[in-house]
Amino acid sequence: MTETADNTPDISLEEVIAAALARARERGAEQAEAAVSLGTGLSVNLRQGEVETLEHQRDRGFSITVYVNGRKGSVSSSDLTAAAVRDMVDKACSIARFTAEDPCSGLADADRMATDFPDLDLDHTWPVSAEEAIEIARACEAAGMAEDARITNSEGASVSTHRSERLYGNSHGFLGGSAASSHSVSCVLIASDDKGMQRDYWYSWARNPEDLGDLEAVGRRAGQRAVSRLGAAKIDTCTAPVLFAAEVARGLLGHFVGAVKGGSQYRKSSFLLDAAGQQIFPDWMQFQERPHIRRGAASASFDREGVATTDRDLVADGVLTGYVLSSYSARRLGLETTANAGGIHNLLVSHGDEDLDGLMKTMDRGLLVTELMGQGVNPVTGDYSRGASGYWVENGEIVRPVEEVTIAGNLRDMYAGIRAVGSDVDVRGAIQTGSILLSPLTIAGS
Image (tube, rainbow, N blue to C red; front, side):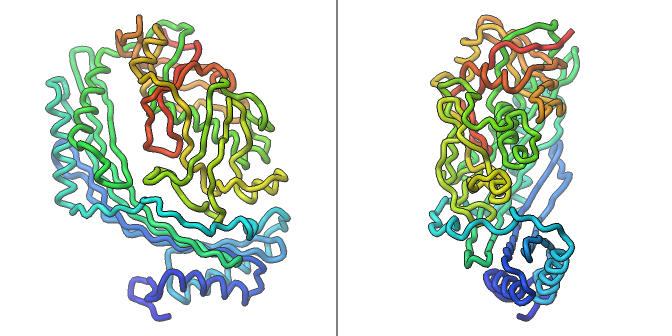
């Protein structure tokens, strides 16, 4: 292998993986896995029409993990040259001699490796130049600033495009690669009147730039949201239903996913410890993991260990059917991997026919939450206490903006008390859910 001046190999990534695995065998590793990643991107941030940052990204990385007599050694680097790869393998084998033996360590089982690699349509280059990206961001911000005379300032607009390639191989003979793109446009604006200032945001994200939609509409939506928050104030402390808008509802369910991950289970640090088979949500709720959605935010034909991904129902009729497991956490629990090394793959939450407006009418009176602040969630007990802002709803209609309140409850009770999920599904993340209406919670205000 010859090397270029910028420390990248002049051979294929497949040959880099093969060379690393062969070296690991020579050094006595019973098992080994290696991964190479390459990424390129462009990010533009501007404020009030002036460019603040312009970045071109070019990232690369290589990692090798070896298993010697039940002991694990791992090394990573951004240097892909032949000498560096050999040196990393040697260091990994050396590290393995000093780590504790762990009978649960090792590769995922060979018979779980993916053999089918469907086209998930994840890779769509956006051939946008820096100059074009600047103009897109400028037009997005300008559209938002022009939305209302009360929009007086901006925290900026941004345009980002990124493409990554990853190749993974292991000593089972598995070799699999994937390429994916990620594009986004966002805007944050500030509105003001005689009562003060308020800020809000909006963004669009897609695998294919054609799916980003009307980019100036992102700015207008940010402007509308900022203006709608003018005059926000506390409310009196009360107990009332709470409606999480779709863009924040994902985070509410993210605590559930964290609680059922294998690491939380075998460390016994979860408020849903040993909860498989238990009723967690209302009996009309389903959580379906669908890894093969075309252009999905978290689609993949195999996980970080090469294990084939498959459809599964994580929650069926409100009952937790199992956990979110890698091969290691599965062995610690005496279970089988669920192909979730690296995270969840497109968790779809069942929903009804009502959109956000419909859920407000169902709620009648309560708090619509559009932003959450703070980290007041205890993953061991499930106690939940977070700062929030949004809108107070009376007779199914927004009557005034709200800020500086705190929502408190316990996640198990909150999940059991879900009254409805809206049809306004946000598909911009690994958890895809609509707005979520909860039974009354304590809302601390004045």
